[in-house]
Length: 423
Figure (tube, rainbow, N blue to C red):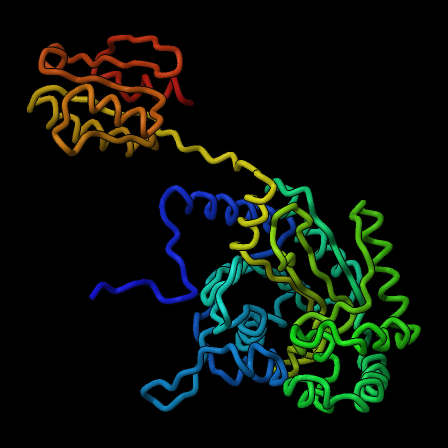
């Protein structure tokens, strides 16, 4: 019986992985410009971290986490998202004591959720995320949103839609919570069991329910914007003002609540409007989470961040037919004729690579015609041909595959020749 890949996972093969590498490098480059530093956290953590940090009323915790017990009897979970792990590290490593604040971090890596696989949604998926901890300035909210937009735009996406909302401070959310309970309670029996259990625990989660999204009470539910106190209104107005000053277009959607319990004040999503992208249009989501650091055992520290799916970003690129500027060429392909020449190319190949050039040679004992075809498949900029006669004369023939020009040069000058040609 053959062993196959687990359901909801994927192999990312050569020819495709280069897209991933380009996207990840471009995202890291943009984060560096914004002064965000990379952090790497474990793939598995204490399951309590996510129960406490993500929220025990979320689908992630209730239905989707991969939980296991290790040999020491500890309850662990494969991480379903990145924020809780970053905040745990922030607390554990006392990063709040660093002189440079806010602490600005980014991460990239696999996350795991047990959910029904579908287009753009996997059980193991790769998330790229950003967290800024230690500032309550609405300008940092606008910065985080602008960073997310910059990643998509600089990679080449155009059909984007930014949606923002305010969830208000704790006082505003408490008033909204009571209004939601009063709104849904008389007809809560018509909703799914999840919504019924969330009514008293976290009624805001009802608005995010996928099963009951078309229920008539969803459309008439009280808007959080009607319950914002003055401080929350001013905060949200400033975020909008800053985004407008950066010429970032956005829409305010009072129904946007996000899927995690730790959000407050600013929440946002970036969506794809590309034709044929699919039913699930969200590319990225994030928001402010004042209170999460304290929940995980740290001092009172405000925070804001976002996470994006690399898989969905690639799907959006495909939908918009964006070709990434990936360099698939190699600098030189070595063609050899005869046993001594073939042996000599081992040394020559090493010297090329050692001097920073991408190079390859034949390992299949192919004829010269087949070697040239291999050079074409590698999209070689130059082909260097070494035969027994050239080797005795200490010469090598170099062909420029773009112009077709050929020249015979000394083997002693071979590396310096490429340094002049390619640098």
